[in-house]
Image 1 (tube, rainbow, N blue to C red):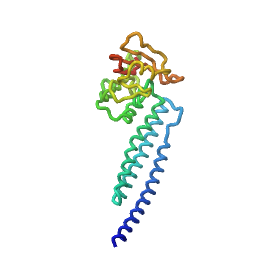
Image 2: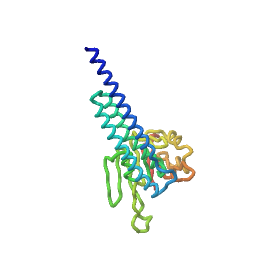
Image 3: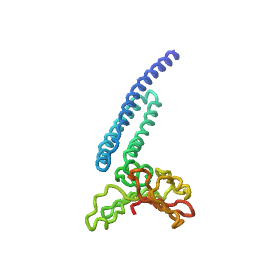
Image 4: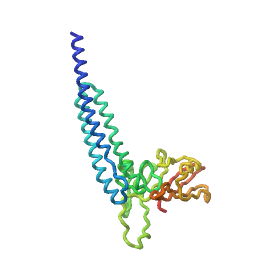
Length: 252
């Protein structure tokens, strides 16, 4: 009798696993379709922003639907075997990062200067929040905004004099950032604590101008890695005892 019961449980278990795998495969096929959502190439300015707004919503909504399906799948078959629930939970963990990586790819064409952790000058505030998460501190003074993370600050330092007294044009994102903390890495590979030689090696072939001799504590450069100059921007490096302690990417 014991062997008959054991055999019956084994057959039931195999049947549940087969059904589980079939439903999981269907959900993962749907996920592949969501991952095909891409920003069309060649878009710039408002057209690019509009495409990001539309397709980011579509991409996120698609992932949320997949997340709900996976949650239901785990609960449905979790009673038969806990491994089914744990597997669906692991799959769900990847979905949020999937949207973050999608957003990084979407904003990359419009970033000026060296990006940090996938964001930079040219991104809108809401795009930064998607990629880096909500800041630990947010300030808004006289219409200007600042996002503060630990060792990384984005803000607006727009010059009121540039408009000859006229109202400033609307701004949707920062025009400067300051990196002073460990744990961050720019698109070129720059990290706090690097030596001057390491910094210059990372930027080799990506600069329109460089001044590293006027003051031993500073490196002043214009980052310009592409022939179309769409990424060029001013960057300032502050060195302490020969090591990078601050990176500033700013218009002035």
